[in-house]
Image 1 (cartoon, helix red, strand yellow):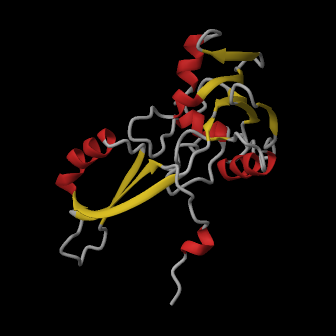
Image 2 (cartoon, rainbow, N blue to C red):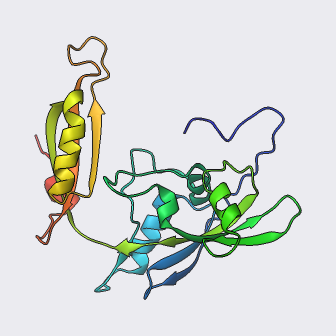
Length: 209
């Protein structure tokens, strides 16, 4: 998102054609994908592949406004989502394969090559080319979204409150209009909590004039 993948005198390897799902372990909730696959493609694959199943898996993190990112790129930046208590992406990575500068394929996990595992996650590609990634999924669940307007100084206490109340995701978008009296001071706090209620589909929730 910040252009970290580009630099003078560097080599940029485009892995966008490596965008396949390699395997899904439905018992353990593990999915292995090629590193060039983007989040929307992975999520659509999960929806299609599991349609009609009683138990379905999904990604653990709720994404931010940017989701057109590759899995390998997300791992290389150790991205985060909107989880109020979740770790960044490293918490969702079971293992990955990396080709080092000598052309050797190295399997990296918390047990195999653990030092390289820690360096490559958030390493911006400096430690090798990530070819495939195994991610930990979580059971899909319905969420209810609530929204309120609060000021910036209210955010820390509000986040702590929502965590105590069982909300698992949240984000805060403050006013960026310089002409507004609320500029950088007041904004929308959205938070999400698991629910057992039947959730209406998107179409039925759209506002009509």
